[in-house]
Length: 253
Image (cartoon, rainbow, N blue to C red; front, top):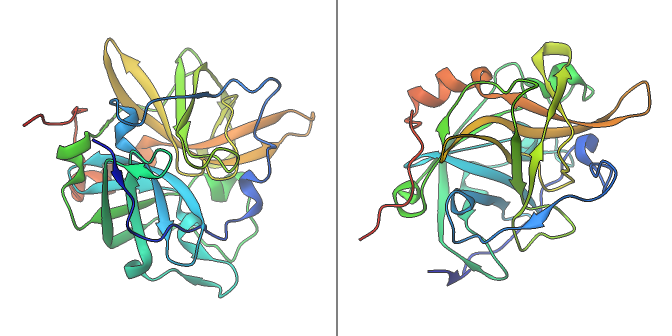
């Protein structure tokens, strides 16, 4: 059941990749989903003691994935201390399903936050969070799947800046193509705060992770599209840290 949150919440200083509400493509198709129901229960807020938020998702018993830029402090131009990071699963209106401190991080070695943000940089904008508690067994996790295709029916879910206390999902959105570096372009609604949010694909009744949302881009033709890192970009690193190959709902007592 949901419990009151006892640790400080925070926001991150993030790049202008997914700023304001620029990530809404036409009508806002996001809907609030119940944080206590799997697989939404595996989605959480990535918090830092400096204040602010990003989104993330559990991909193993003690492992989550988010966007690398969420861990970078633009003001100090340094990576945030690991001790300041927390993952809060199933956050909903002041209550949560489970929380853990981050004990270690693994950031893409190709992600250089000193470079101007671009599609090529977004394509390597991922970070893995090793947790100090077994949240995955408690709230469930999603297994690593294949990269999405234009035929995939996508679902994104995260904690956007306009609704930071409830998870919102856009169901039935689509991939529109590939960009520089292999970044996935998509039409799913996602705003500031949704960085690190999972892009899910269902196979029958089981969800799998296809990508993580990291950015919003305005194309040369004026279209606004999301950018997502496909799972193959970080799958090997994630599996070496204990990512589950299969999705797993919460273990019931």
